[in-house]
Amino acid sequence: MQKEIEINLPPHKNDIENITRISASVLKIDPERINAIQIVKRSIDARKTKPFYKLRLAIFIDEDAPENDFSPKFQDVSDAKQVLIIGAGPAGLFAGIKALELGLKPIIVDRGKEVKSRRRDLAAINKEHIVNPESNYCFGEGGAGTYSDGKLYTRSKKRGDVRNVLETLVAFGADSDILADAHPHIGTNKLPQIIVAMREAIINNGGEVHFDSKMTDLLVEDNEVQGIVINETKTLKSNLVILATGHSARDIYYLLDKKKIAIEFKPFAMGVRVEHPQQFIDSIQYKTADRGEFLPPSSYQLVCNTKERGVFSFCMCPGGIIAPCATAPGEVVTNGWSPSKRNNPYANSGIVTEVKESDVSDYSHAGALKGLKFQEKVEKKCWEAGGKTQAIPAQRLVDFMQDRKSADLPASSYIPGIKSVELKEVLPDFIIRNLRKAFLEFEKRMTGYLTNDAVLHAPESRTSSPVRIPRDKETFEHIEVKGLYPCAEGAGYAGGIVSAAIDGQKCIEKIMEFKQD
Image 1 (spheres, helix red, strand yellow):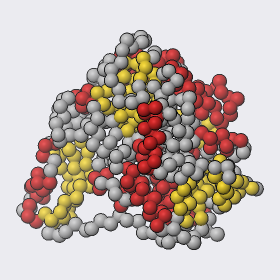
Image 2 (image 1 turned 60 degrees about the vertical axis):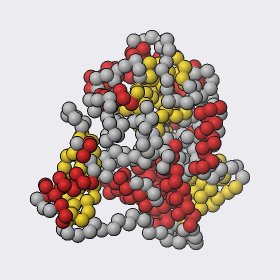
Image 3 (image 1 turned 30 degrees about the vertical axis):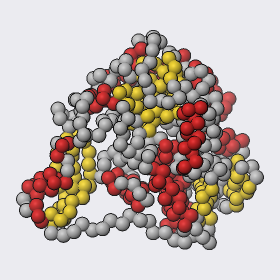
Image 4 (image 1 turned 90 degrees about the vertical axis):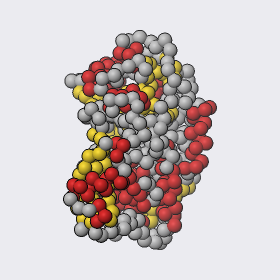
């Protein structure tokens, strides 16, 4: 017999013995009758004086829990119809896995390197300020998520699809806790092994994965895709191409614009990455700076409307590190990540505000690329202000609010270094104005948030793509080019690992639904 119950537990009693004892008490049965307990959902409620765990449990009484096998069922696709997948990020990899399930042969190409080799290029950015435009925090096997956090939270309403993505990750080596946690997280130290396992499954079942393979041309005849050119020399033929290149592959937008393939401006967001000592956030959220061994580092999620536009937290990383995520020389970009234990002494989060089409009117000559041009200019300006290295402009939070340059700066997790700069010198006025309004509102909700021990790092500029590649709502094909499937973040249809993975899966499903010939 199986029963589902909900219980609340203090952090120090969140162990299987106490869970079993309390579950038996709730069900009014002998604890010996409980053969197994599965945690269906787990979250922390810190709204009251003392935080506690909220657990939804599946209790198996007088019977064993069923064995869970989340392994996808693959076909041998060695001789199947081919689909070219451009990009080996979450969208591309999950499209490849779904292709194996449905009987298509995925051929994945990525401009970057495989996981292990990427580490050397990341070290070069951090220590030598050298940006490899083909291999960095954004480009390479696994995409940006591999080395920039691995958070699996999504606001997507497609809960069944979300569950499938999480189960697939478990099948390839992720901890099964991600199936229960309200805000699941894998961590940058664990994601690489999972991604390699996915790649090996694709190859072992007849698919192909190629690195150091940059798409330099898209072949189109009579409004139908014919294939791609790799590294300006090698042609791959197929009338099915999934474009899953991510939001930082700017050359793809320039290529499409040059070939007069429809693209359009998309609103995006820009701002700063704020870093607090983790103890500050713990003291606000848990009402104590010493959370002890039974609570994880606390996080937050903030959003407000300044009447002019929205401002919100983005990619909050408890116990995390701020990373240099430039994809070309002459620019600086920030992002954040956390290891699985989230045990670094700092908490960081993007705090960003909307960028509307009216904000980029000075770049109207660039057409659909006007948002991208705006983005590029801000990143270059911050690079120049930081000393033309990967060091970035920074300002203490209260100094920012009081419009004064920081006389000094505290330690930062950002390895290339930070330089004291008044951020109003590098960010547009409307961003500065709305960030200041938002920080006042955030202080009302999290008393103590507005402290000069917090540091703003600029810019946080790659929250999403400033370009959309339009596609048909039903078939997912490009609105003008048959056989071309704009996908996930780079096409403007998803954000984050889970939603990008879902979009990759759906592109394959749409191909099977509408391209059976």
